[in-house]
Length: 213
Picture 1 (cartoon, rainbow, N blue to C red):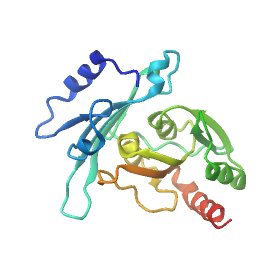
Picture 2: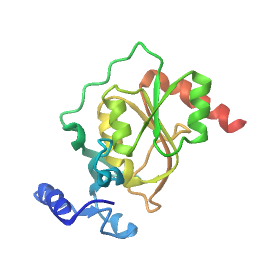
Picture 3: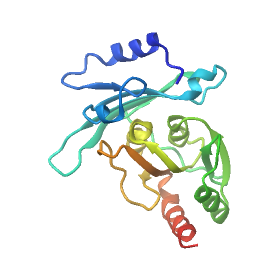
Picture 4: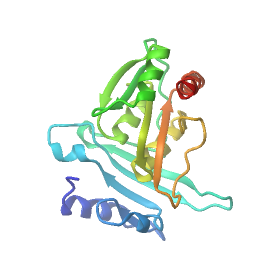
C-alpha cells in the first residue's frame, strides 16, 4: 500500500532493540502469522497518494496476561504529514471539551449508515479523513469529538490508535458498548467507537435506536 522497502526497513530498524518481542508488517506477512506477534508496524494507502497528510504509521505492543485476554500496553502513532507523533508514554493530555456542535469523523470514501443515523439523531456535524490512525488521532487532538466506524477493519488497523486514545482518557469500545479485544484468532474487528467520554452514553443509545429500527 505504497510502503517501499526502504521505509519498511527503517521502521523495523527503529524498533529492533525491543527485547523478546516479535515484529510483523501488514504488507509482508499472512494474517495468521501476525497473531503470533505482539509488535505492529503499519502504514495506510493514503501514504502512496503523495499529496495527503491524513495517513499514519502505527506501532502497538500487546502482552499476554493471566486472564483470558492479553492487553495493549504501549503504542505510538505517527502523523508524518503533520509532523506529529502521539504515544502512550507520555500519554497525550485529554482533549478539552469543545463549546461547539460535536464533530464526527468518518471515512473519506463512505459513511456507514449507523454513523449517519447517529449524527442525525444527535445533531453532529461530519468531517471526512483517510486512515483509521488519522481519524482516531483527530479525536485525541480535539480536532473532532467522535470517530464511529462500522463495516469492518483488521485488528492491526486500530490497535495502536486505540491504545493511544485510551491513554488520553477517551472512551473506546465496540459500537454496542462492549470492549475492544485485540490479538484474537479472528483478526476481523467489525466496528469501533472513539469519543469524548461525555458523549459516549448518548452515542451508544443512538446506535441501539438505529439497530432496533
